[in-house]
Length: 375
Image (cartoon, rainbow, N blue to C red; front, side):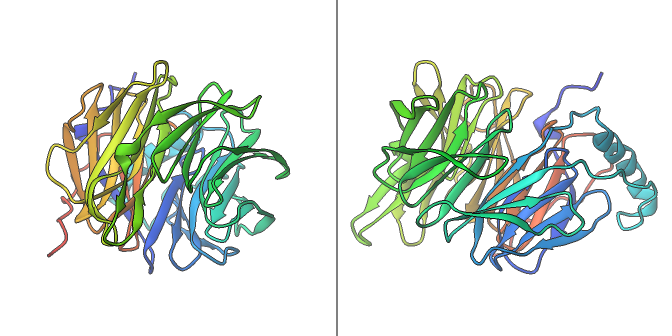
C-alpha cells in the first residue's frame, strides 16, 4: 500500500522547455504526456517517458481549452509503473538515456479550443498528431473545454455568452445552454454526469440540468469580478473551475481586490461552493501576492491546490476545509495553468517563460529549489 500523499513532499521532477510563453497545460488520461499550448499558436506534446517533444499544428490562434477522451490509468497501471521504475533509473542514466523500452501509448483523443472559436479533434497518441475534425463552435474565444465523466460528451464555453454540448465521437452539437449575460470563462461537468457548472466574467456561476438545458440556480462568485471605472473595463471570471472528486464542492479560481484592471493588479482567490446548499467560502494564500489564480484542482487525497501568476509564480496548497493556505511553492515566471494526473501522483504548471514544471508527490532524490525570479 502506498503511503498517503503529503502536499509538503511535492518536489520538482523535471522542467520541459519551449521557446515561447505557454498558456495552458494538461496531462493525457494515462499521465504519459503533458500537452501545453503556446503563444505561437501551437500545442506542444511532451512525452515523459522518452523526453520527445512534438508540435501539434492546426490552430491559427492561441489555445486555452484542452480536454481528452480516453480511459484514465490508475497508479498501478502499466504506464505509471514504468514511470516509477524509469524515475528510479534517471539518477544513473539521465533523462535523455532511456534504459527501459517504453510501452506503446494508450489511445486517446485530444479536443482543443482556440481564440477563433474553433474546436479541433486530434488522435493524441499518434506519432505526429494532425487535425482530424474542426468544428466552428463559438463566435469569439473558446475559453474552456471539458469532457463528461463517461467520455461521450464535450462541453465548451466562450465569448458568445454560451455553453455548448457536443457529441465526443463526431462533434455533433447536442444543445446550446443560454442564459449568461457576459463572456463565459469556464465550465465543468459534475462527477455524476447529469449537471454542468459554468461561470462568466461577472462572477455568475450557473448550475445546468443537462437533460433539460435549464439553469436551475445561480451561485454568487462576484468576488472574482470588478468593474474598473478608470479603464471602463470589467476584469474577472473563473480562470479555473473544478469539482471535488465526490461532487460535493465546486471551486472557481480567479482574481479579487482589483485596483487596476489594465495591469491586472489584485489578489488571487478561490471561491469554493458547497454543491448541496450553495454556500461559499473563499480560499486565499497565507502570504501576500499580487496576481491571479489561473489553475485550481481538488486532489483525491483531500487537499486542494492552485497556481497563480502576477508578481512571479506560485502554487498554493489548502488542507481540507481550511481557507488559508498551508504550503507554497515558488515557480519561476508567472504560472498560467495547473494540471493534475488522474492518479494524483503528479501535477504540472505552465508558465510565461515557456516552461512546464512537473512536480511529483512520490519520494525520490532531492532537487535543487527553484529560485524566485530576479526583480
